Length: 158
Image (cartoon, rainbow, N blue to C red; front, top):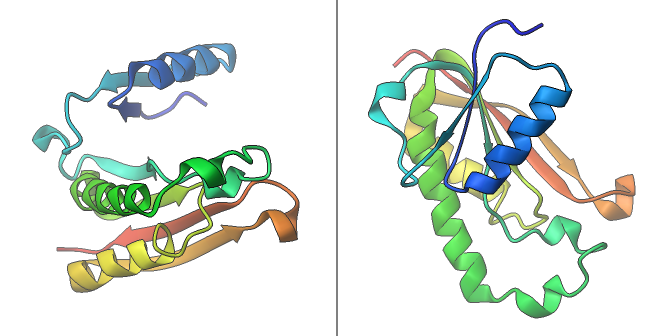
């Protein structure tokens, strides 16, 4: 209903422009986009959001059915690099969420290292400040479409 503020941030301009066009077609008027110069969260946004969606870079193994050549391109070294990047993004951008707010961590991967293990490591590091509310695992062999993972986390009072 075009209430509140929607802020979309990325280090890549193209996805932001595509999002802006889709939002205009859908009649969304309260979207603001911002190009990040680096992956770290901007300090002015600390505790500024009620809700945050982190659609993190991932291996994309959930899309293997329609991207079959991915299995030949993806290396263990690349997955390790992505794991480090995902952890860094989750740690830094969780700072956007105000106490009582929620964060959704999402990938299109089937790998536990990119999904539940990543979330579990974050929760162990952050102690009682965060809790896991819900996880969603979608698998091509069960649901019939791309694989996907999402975890909804809640930030508690500091």
